Image 1 (cartoon, helix red, strand yellow):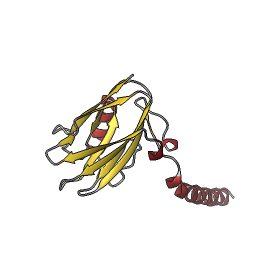
Image 2 (cartoon, helix red, strand yellow):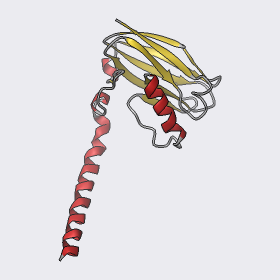
Image 3 (cartoon, helix red, strand yellow):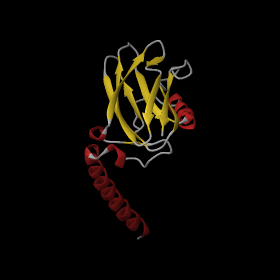
Image 4 (cartoon, one colour):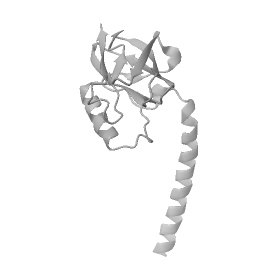
Length: 162
């Protein structure tokens, strides 16, 4: 009897998992800012809400161009990130603590499950986009956490003014 109850519950759990899985297939059409809660340093936004677009270029010399980006509190920016090099690169927005945490995460990863609202992985020759809202002033960073890149200095500053 207990075995039959467990099997019935497992069956219901499988059906529930399948329903949830099918429901998640539609999330790619949902606004980016609804996928993850706001973070201490801002939140993902829909690209159509951008106040302006900034093009960032990743360089195989372990640098970004520009190295410093200025934003205003309350502004939403669409970052268009171009990889003109031969290596994959990442553009990840965060405060120093989040950069360090993401560096550890990426060191233990093969980068295939790379999916966060605050970062984009760009293959050589490709362009990626990331829209971000900056709710308050402060200093943030952006960095590339492909193994070895961040430690080689591939980072930049975002200065968010009032």
